[in-house]
Image (cartoon, rainbow, N blue to C red; front, side, top):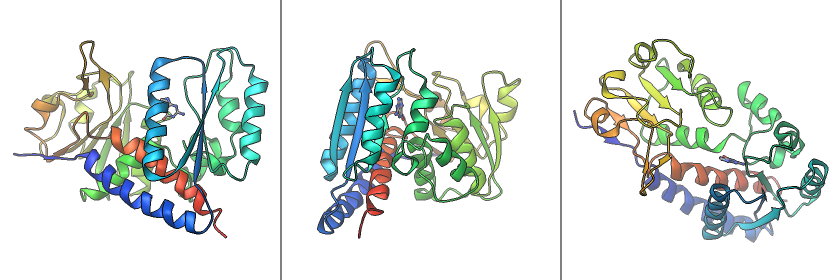
Length: 283
Ligand code: GUN
């Protein structure tokens, strides 16, 4: 069988063109979409991610502001900075880059962001809204995966979706979104016994463990759809996913590559969420 490779970069480029046009239209209505990112300390990976987000904004015409704060900033000071952005009607999206320094309570910070500007979709109000199927700001990676499944016409209704990984950012919300789309969902995680017995039953397998080669050819069903959320950076350059792509692709109907799979969709959904907020500011 020759699998369809689900290229997120192609869909991401298409959506970014649409977003660019929407930004233009918003500007005609005097709304200048703006994303503000708060970065605390000097984590090199965080700096790279923030730079990528900034560049993506600029390419579609979204104003991007990065506020760099010192590693030893107090929690109160950080909350004060967020409060200013919550009140600033020129700021549509607020994103606090994670991880935060150990002395800062991440839950408290994320809950302090105005849920209607929470473009990461991490606020408990947005998680709750998503859970009960209300309109919500949805976390970027799961939203990107759903767009990718829709683009490649993957049927979810009645299908068995297995999610490997239970993070708040990816695993839990993607399972919820698939459930909202009438899939039958099973969650697996690091304590799951007989993982392979379960993944082999999946019509749709979402792998978000962050561990290279979690899933081999023997762990998948013939004809399944595989979404690989992993991105492990190799010492000598390059990046690989959580799935043994070369072996698995011989057995399945569809699979995302790494790179050029889920990754490009994530930042695209950040732009999407920012525009979604900004469009509410239109008169
Ligand atoms: N750090 C790693 N991934 C993310 C993300 O999606 N959002 C934020 N805010 N921080 C991150």
